[in-house]
Picture 1: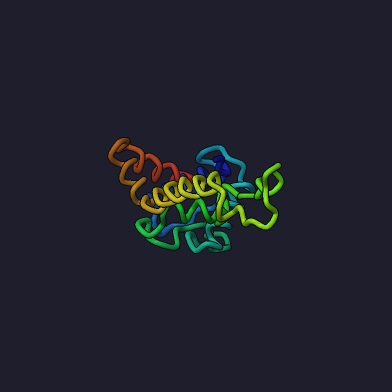
Picture 2 (picture 1 turned 60 degrees about the vertical axis):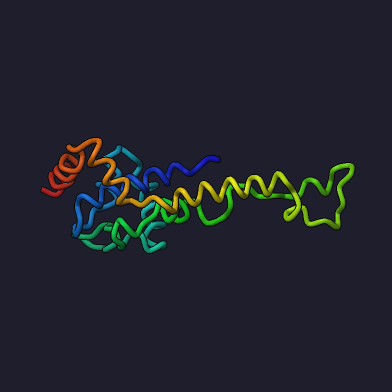
Length: 160
């Protein structure tokens, strides 16, 4: 399964915004932090805004902020906002065209390959739904205690 690279960018942006609450940050500044293309990151941030994960304000003091508390934003919320809600595996019922296939059978319901893939995806989605942006922030702060301060300082220096 391959996720859009925008998922990584969006999650990092959410984490960074946790360390500068109440302060809108432009897509340009969020992109500059990781040397990402601003236009492409902006598309991801707009997707997060449409999903209610972020809010955006226009104007000279505008930018992006988290629209919900980090404890209320799951990793699955971000993945769905960026990659969409569709299942990663899509049964196209190729078994109908096999030599012993039956065109009258709904193989999406009976195919053991499809059911195995659905079960695996449910485990994957449950794990993503069980972890929040706040969990990541806490893990980063525990494992790399200087990160919150250095990130905050970097963004503050960009507005000075």
